[in-house]
Amino acid sequence: MTKLSRRGFLGSLAGSSAGFLTAVTLPKAAFAADQAPQKWDQTVDLLVVGAGGAGLASAVSAAQHGVKNIVVLEKMPFFGGNTSISGGGFNSVDPVRQGKQKIKDSPELHARQTLAGGDGRANPELVKTMTANSYDAIKWLQDMGMKFKDDVYQIYGGLYPRCHAPYGSLGSDYIKVLKPQCDKEGINILTNSRVVRIFRENQLSGKVLGVEYVDKDGQHKTVKAQKAVIVATGGFGANPEMRAKYDPRMRNLTTTNLPCSTGDLIPLMQDIGADTVGMDFIQCNPGCPPGRKQRIILHLYAKNFIMVGPDGKRFIREDERRDNIRDAVLALPTQTAFSILDSRGFGDLNPGHQDGAKKGLETGDAWTANTIEELATKMGVDPKALRATIDEFNAGVDAQNDKLGKAPRNLTKIEKAPFWAGYSGMSVHHTMGGVVINPHSQVIDRYGKPIDGLYAVGEVTGGIHGTNRLGGNAICDIFTFGRLCGIEVSKL
Image (cartoon, rainbow, N blue to C red; front, side, top):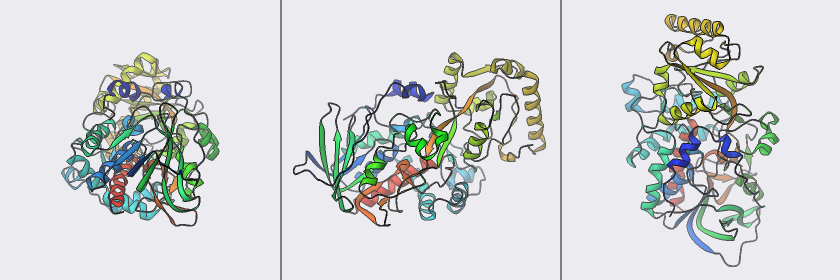
């Protein structure tokens, strides 16, 4: 059983995954086939592919509902996936926390905003399933020891104050809760195990039987799954060629993803009949400009930061949709902006993000100063222009009327030293497209029929977020559907 001793690894990645990408070369996946082996190397009840948040949640939920003999295959030498380095913000209606903050909300409002934020291109039934069950997922995680901060907030690109921040640091908090549950339930996690083939009774019909994977020694092994195979391998944000196939603008951008996000299982599922949707819907977030390696995260709280271009002027309201901010940044002459906040806003950041910003002081990707003029000089921006921008913004806060239309609830002055700034280029963050699923997480074939024995959860799926994912909805997605998928397979 793999031990949760990855603090040093996660610490090095919390600020930047971009530098790590250059050090890892992942082999390409093989094609799927319908020729099942005469003799399987191992037989399990449930096989989960991917040991990130979605995979571990699915496995734990299934075990808690009576499924025995569960194996999780993870191609990387560690578990946790992108969940471990995410900000961890979880969008959900929460009668307790929102009630104390006098925030009116409902699953229906969350669903309407999710659908509108994705231009109506998501599957309404999937969205309804997610928003109606997200609070149960919050309570489920809390029952296992997950701790969230007392107040919800509006995360960057989230459009409404319903986001839950992990109490400790980053998305790794979820993994620190789920891994002990895997140990408790006897779930076996095999790292360095890359799936290269999915076996089905017939290539385009019949039940999915199991998979073939390559272990750390290069040996090919097969696993038969009596109940089902759940694929939870994430998206393809770290695969430039696959990104460019669907959106050529994405080829040369950096990524916030770990190198495991190469979309290997999507073509393997297509080979046995799976349909896909929304593959050209690719989201970017503030991250490393090309040529930089340290990602600076000053933008999570929409109320706390402003964004300026190289001229020191704001160019878009900071609580806009993520795709609109992406396009606005990419339209700048340098395709790079700066995020700015004051000491109060910096204090609201998770410790992991604060550490990343402090590391950025050493790498030249972040700056701090006691005056706006000094900060501007360090940024290479005209001090008078930045001073005028800050003064204009603060005046808008006083008047509760922002020039660019930022919502009054997200207007907070930038006035308390020391001030912070960091590069905000555009990095590929999330791929909204993937295999088609139904509300039971069953993978759907190109004729609209469920593929027997095959389920998928998380970023490897499509149809939940439409053209643009709301901030905080990815963590909501993986844990809401992970919990529900575990319950579904327990009924088989």
